[in-house]
Image 1 (tube, rainbow, N blue to C red):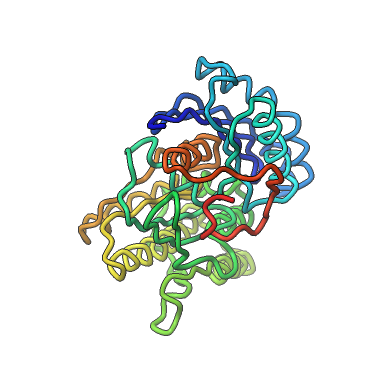
Image 2 (cartoon, rainbow, N blue to C red):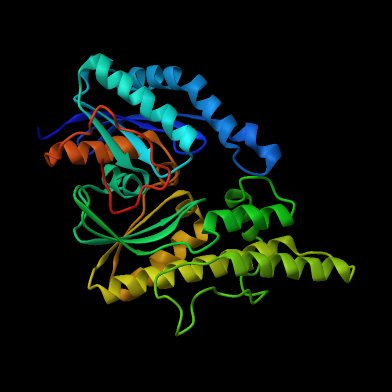
Length: 344
């Protein structure tokens, strides 16, 4: 089957995503979010997210089918994020996908959320060069991956040790009095700031530190302590300069480690994905450093970087085309699914 038609379900966190893909062509990408319900808590509440997925699932499926101009019976396969993510949220998506696959008598593919963030790039830029290095940066993950074969083999090179980049954005936004989630408001505030105004630390960049692992806990704490010191002294906090300097520290660490991974492994293609990949400074610095190193940079549009059903459908389409065996009917959710398990 050269151009499989696949519907994908994504419910790993607070976004209910349903995407429909034919081969590498995106036909529909319907999304419902419960972000407004979490905002007053300053973070995603798992129970609220799970209930929101239940309420949004069927309407979002109907919207995706209408946008694609197809009926459910037209699809060749059903794909769903089975991990990693919030257990309750994942279970809603897995249960829905299993129900549709059973009712339609179609094969079911449980896929890895992180690998799907890599696969979505194929919808915009065509088949992925293999091998590639992928850097995934989101609220829960900062990961460097070696991708010899997206349908069969993904290897972890580095990961978050404590706070992921997205978590640091949220926590820094909170101490600056900016809205949740923190990524977009910090990006906007940083446009009017000086990225060199404050010398915030670059975590895990010393000669004895792990080459590809990430830690943003120290950076987050340094920003909070700097703000506290200003407030104790009765001085105003320059929000734009703090945002720009913090954002620069994050982008500097991420891009430096990604380019280093490409050089160390002799790979000349880098894919950037995940919600934080929508950050304007990260995209610009990655482009600058990749150009200087002779590395081809592939970054999906900001809409495709955040969690969505299209990325799940894209990976499902890749698996079907590669002849990968579908999942068993007893497929479950795995909140800590390792990245080297592309499908299960």
